[in-house]
Every structure is written in structure tokens, then in C-alpha cells.
Length: 408
Image (cartoon, rainbow, N blue to C red; front, top):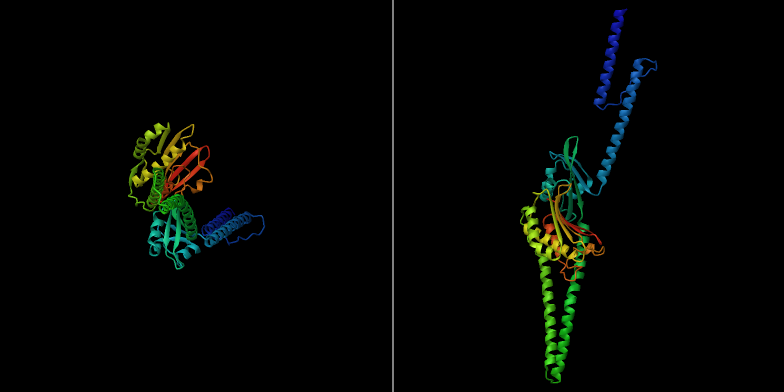
């Protein structure tokens, strides 16, 4: 009997282990369809089968939920109007949605290297951009030229790196903004031209009429008449010079040289700017504070153009704090959380009016009595040439901060 019990126990154990191995193998293979028979006879085998079935049912439910979520997000991904592409380190495409296929005019995409055949600039941008980086790419399409805004995010999932690329056609938005910019520019140009032309035309007509009257009446010109004519001609000359300067300023906006990129030691640049402007700081009793983090931060750009932008912003800050009790100007450089180099010029001035704030980068718009209105517009164009941007935030009574963003 003992021998029979031992044999029975061994057989029972082997059978139980076999069922456990089968159960674990089903889980490993994501096979949750097996159902273990339950006799409800109160045996341990019955209890084991009940537990197995409960675990498999729960896993099957979780799998169904994950599959439903995956299909839901895949469906959303496919129906977005923004083009989306994901690929791994080897360039193998994981997902490419319908919008991306439509923008690139393709039916399928197996590897990201295939984009080079479509557009080399786009292919370079996708590979060179890092998280948060963006670039505007012009691409030919059967429906016409597209302006694609390319944005890249680098992600890590289960120790595997991959990139998510978004493509957005902003052609219509650019055309709308371009039209708005032209309208604003035309308003400013016509305003400036009329301000100069009106007095010239009026004075010329007055002098002409007076001289015709003198000629018709054969009157002699006395010293007083000559003084009046001289004053009129002098005024015409000054207004004409103003027009020439205005046209010269306009020409400078349209002829910004291409940047000559080189490594710029920001510490040396900031020191140079302080020496250059120290007399104005002393004259207006301004505290100038500079900070660079890290101290050896290097920027790749055109030193003379970047220096021109910073001088313009600091000069604006000097004028902004002239009437302030506390006169402080800050010049700071640092790397933000997305790896971009940021240079900020801040002041403790009166701030910029909320109504004027959106217009300050429009050419020839100025809030100063003596100002050409091209400094900030010129600075914005220089930053664009450096693949960067310039932003401003201001609060009345608290000062203004200009932020130069270098995407690298």
C-alpha cells in the first residue's frame, strides 16, 4: 500500500507539474484560450483549475483591452491631419499615417532612407534634428508647393530608441501671414512717404505760385522774399534727406548678408559688449549684470551679426530704463531643458504697451520719438538666418525680456 501511495503521489505530482508547465507555456505564448475542466468535487486539482481559469480569463481580458487601446490610438494616429512617422535606430518605419503619405505623395514607406529620393532637405532635417528641433522645408507636390513644418521628438521605449517626426503643411498659414505682413508694411510705407511728400509738395506749390505771381507782376524780389524761398528750399532739402534715409533703411532690411558661422565664446562676447557700452551705462547710472551658465558656453553663429542684434537690444534697454528709479540691465546665456542655447536681454524699464507688443517686429513700426523702427525687424531676420528665433515678454511697470533662441 505504501508503494502504491508513493507511485500515486509521484504520478499526481508529475501531472500537476505538467499542468503548471502547460499553464506557464500558454502565458508565455499569449495563449489564453485554454480552459481547464472544473468538476466541483472539492479536490485540490479542481481548485488549481479554478485558479488557472481565473488567471487566464484576467490575462485574456487585459490582452483584449490592450488590443482595443492599440487599435483606437492607431485609428486616431491614421486620421490626424498632421503627418506622423515613427522609425527606429536602423531607420525601419514603425508607423506612417495617411496624412504623411499624402504629403510625401507615396503609398508606402519601409525605411526612412527612402525619404531622400523624395526630398534631400527633408531627409537631412529628419536625421539632424534633435528633440524639440523644427525646420521649415519646401517640397514639391502634385497639388503645388508645400511648406512643411518638420518637428522631431526622440523617445526611448523598452531600451529601444526611436524618433517621432511630425509634418504639418503650413502653406496657407504662411500665405495668410505674408499677406498680413505686406499690408502692415504698405501701411507703414505709405504713412512715412506721405509724411515726407506732403510738405515737399505743399512748399513747392507755394514757392511756385509766389514766383509766378512775382513774374507776372514784374515785381522785384526783396531780401524777405529770398529768406522765405531759402527757408522753403531748406525744408524741402531736409524732408528729401529724410526720404533718402528711409529708403536706405528699407534697403538694409532687404540685404542682410549670409551668416559666416564660427565658434563664438559667449564669455568674450559679453565682455566686449560691456566695454563697448560702459560709457552709456555710466552716463545713465545703469547697473549692467551678465551671467553665463556654463561659463565656457560656445555658440556657433556669425559673431558680427549676433553682436549687432545684442547691441540693438541693449540700446533699446538703455532707453527703456532712462526714466526708471531702478536702472538694471541683465544679459544672460544658458542652455534650456531641450538643449537650445538661449540669450536673454532684460531690463527694469517701464515695459511695452500690450497693444504695441505684437507690432514691434514690423519694419518701421516704433514707439520711440527718435527711432527708425528697423532695429527689431533686422534682429528678427538675423535670427532667422541663424535658424533661430526672437521672442519678447513684457509687463507694464516691470520691464521687458527679449529672448534669442538658437536651435543649433
